[in-house]
Image (cartoon, rainbow, N blue to C red; front, side, top):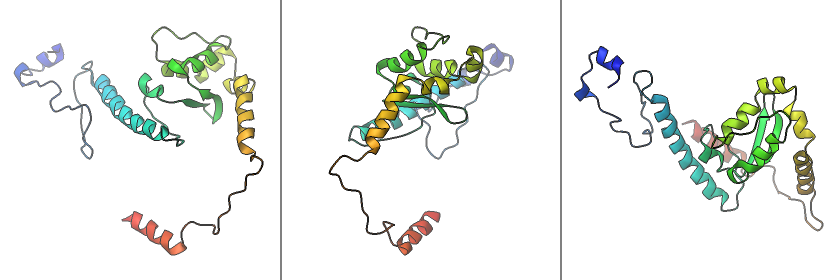
Length: 201
């Protein structure tokens, strides 16, 4: 029992550790997680959040495995979640791209790209690549290194490769026909209007 709780007169037999915690919060229920400082509240929340994000990412991965393209944002620094992605589009403040490319197994492509830049510190052993990436690309790091990661990206082979890929994908292959639709909208005006009204209630 933490000393602070003993001083407040909490009865040890009344304390229940993680009562009713199933690994996820119930939808539609407002949950308060309370405890003294250092009791592990943040750690527990991170674990529960990572588990929920992992469930979402499993569903996303199943969708991708059917041949669909999925673009999504996950606000979860867990290494398992981060490495579930095939590609990363990393931007700095202002919307400038600083890395657009594959992650690779254990984020090897991302790590190799940033470690090749002069002055960027190497990743420590067993360190989370997502956390490291955010640390080395922070604005304070740019100022300290006297570098602009957006400019460095635009001068990189990766940028050239991406521009070539975009040009290739943007040019129709010989013999292909343009897409043609008989109408501008897929549904008549009244059908769309009814759908919008239905969504309001």
